[in-house]
Image (cartoon, rainbow, N blue to C red; front, side, top):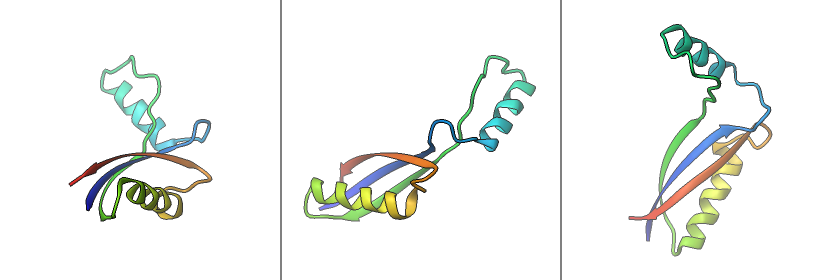
Length: 83
């Protein structure tokens, strides 16, 4: 079966996010004064072949832990749908 995973990778709570802080300041500078915090992450779509949902979840979890996210600084979540 074919699967599509949508993976969101974000910094763990407590990890400094200079890009998020710069974005927050820029938003405030153009008139969005109510923005108190911005966290920047990344979004990936991965299409893969796997025999079952469980196999696809295992694959995307391993991909995320080994390559897509840095487990020291980042956490990830994903949605999986059959194609």
